[in-house]
Length: 350
Image (spheres, helix red, strand yellow):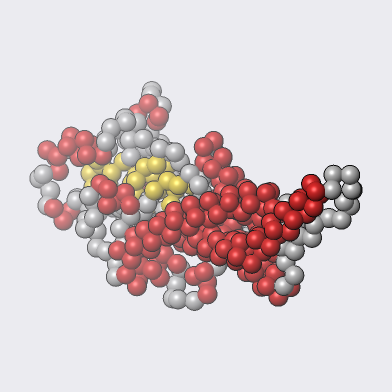
């Protein structure tokens, strides 16, 4: 007997509908209702989620290193050498809080199950356990052999069907889906704020500090050149940086490039994600022209559904709904059995 993997045929969903069209035409249009996500839930809802993808892991590490580099330049190049203690404390505290929230949001977006459908549950035993009504039609993903609920799409990187999948983001090494879209939105928002804050501080540093330091270094160099036999042990006072002016310039230019690049990128992603939430349409649905097939929520209800309740400070917190206790409420045991070959499954089963 063939294994379930060999029974899975890598064909598109549209072709599967075409093969079953002759049998489905005899049914009424309202009877062809795909199974809802409320019936099929993720069996890994309470488990640790991590995608073992080399490209995604490298991109996630680069993200953390870039944030840490920005923190190093802000603290050790601009703030700690500054004589204005209040300026250093206020900006240092604000920058590190935003950077911490950005990294925490990144971690939650990366390690949260985006809404994966249980793999290999397209069995006769499992479908019968759902107690569906005669005339209903359910669809099987030919790639992961799972029953696809409404608005679920298969991700070739995660190798799972993801509910309300917007896209797969290598920077968070995960899909952006129903369960982790909030954390991805917070990640883009906090990275944009960190980038903007660092750019503002760099501008202030150039205006008030760099010109004075560079002039002092040039004067000392000229005095040393005019008296080659005289030893100068007096160091040039650097009031705004503990590094030399050339090194300071290089570090600040790199920070400017990084901040400007990520400010533009994350601002665009933030706006795109908020628009997707308000219109209740994912990126894949727009690309495939699947918009309008389901009843879209009003924008305010969609925002509350994505961020987990009415407006509050919890909307801005990546730690909301974080629990160390394992909950089995979302666990659905999948009955063992033979994978059904058809990609369009009609109820009752033959």
